[in-house]
Length: 211
Image (cartoon, rainbow, N blue to C red; front, side, top):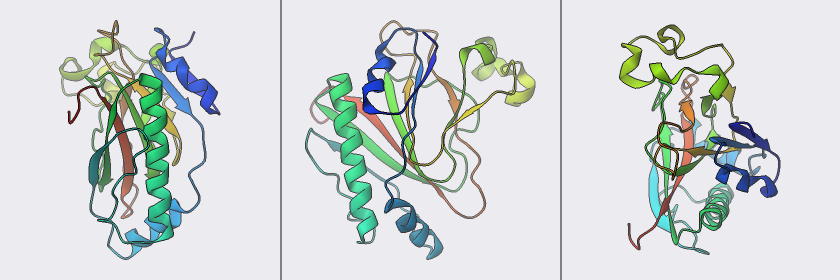
């Protein structure tokens, strides 16, 4: 099986649990009310505040720090749905979530997370980018790049960079996943286009109550 798997429905998500798979790309549309809501907040200069919290199965997230509107309810429903799917997939009792409102790339260099499996979904702006195993030379990750840009360090074997778009979901396997030491999805944040902030949701499994 390839290290990158693309799916179009929920039935494909368990593929991330296969040992060879490092990244799963779920191609799904963004719930329609979210885009105009976030665009309106950005145009009014009110989209600055990131949010975070924890969810148990069936719980709804608290997004009350954002202005009330149908789009906020749609964002909360999408977050709750993804948290339920993610928690069920991994069998974890709680899911930690955070929403980042970004004016610049948070992690602009290709890297591997020291995590188990992380879910990321961009609600506004360009989505997360990645390199398939065949297109990367892991010897040049991190400090081994010598400070050179990704395109010059030797990391990128080709110019084939995977990209997601708003609404799509990525499951990224990190180096701390069982049996995955020295591996993990190689990914980076995209450049932020103009004055419109990128809004990204990330989910992580929590294995201890309150953890």
